[in-house]
Length: 108
Image (cartoon, rainbow, N blue to C red; front, side, top):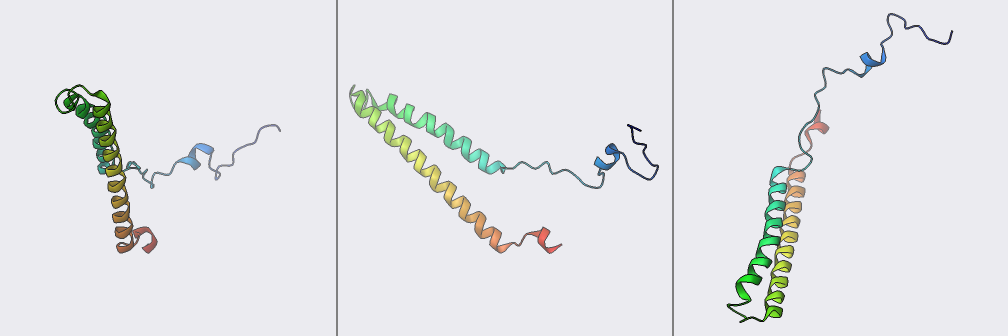
């Protein structure tokens, strides 16, 4: 009496889990264009300040590494602020598109 018999009309655990009519959603959570923008700004955050430091330390500032480092820090902040602005504009455009197009699942 410790085990339970399965009645023929009753489904087993394995049969209950199978849902062949439902397809799994394999779309990425983040769109590709957002990932590409993030990668672009990441490379810009690395290349622009370091490149500006080494380009200006001997040519523009004549060996003054403090001024070249200050310019590099300034340009890093410019890249960061531009990323924030692009992200905010993208978020606003998604909100406007969402207001124009009602969710198709709600209509069904």
